[in-house]
Length: 232
Image (cartoon, rainbow, N blue to C red; front, side, top):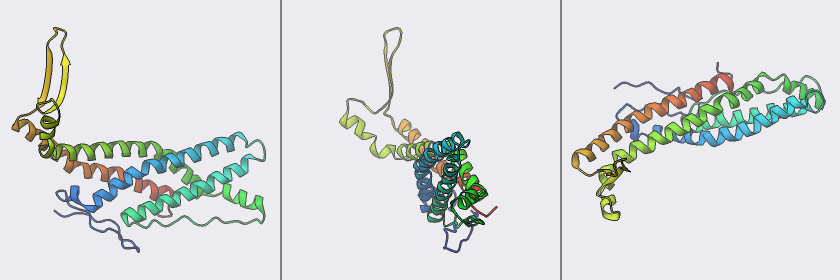
């Protein structure tokens, strides 16, 4: 199967994208999975910094105090953007060019504040933190769910005996309920066809999960190129 390649970088990126059948076991997939997992705490940190600073700055904008707060917001957002570019470079080998450095044309504190407020890269970094926050939650939830579910179901034949050996169940208990007629119903996975079916379902999820994670992280990389880099 022919596959596309990640962009080459000056830092020596991870060039080869694994094929469909190798993807679940490829280091690239585990890097993408790690990116999706670490993206949530980074997004929470960014959101918790950006939103209060923006709210405080707008609330105080009628006074002289609002402008320094907004300038601090933009400086923090730029720092968060640099951290995101570092994550992408470390895990994907893709070196995104940093935005131009802040151009200060007037001396003094107010000169730096006004330069910071007129910084397009800072405002785009703020937008990135706000827009990508819900996406980070979605990516974390889907990646973790599909990854763990796929592996646990695919490996089910290896540990299915433990339910019968260490519990009172005959096999893994899927459902246990009592109907309105008072009859107790139990559904357990015990037979070889049932165990095989669970394993096959796990294999399907196992091979589809890398494609899902790649799509989710691909959106993050596109957003970083558009909002955190000069590479547009």
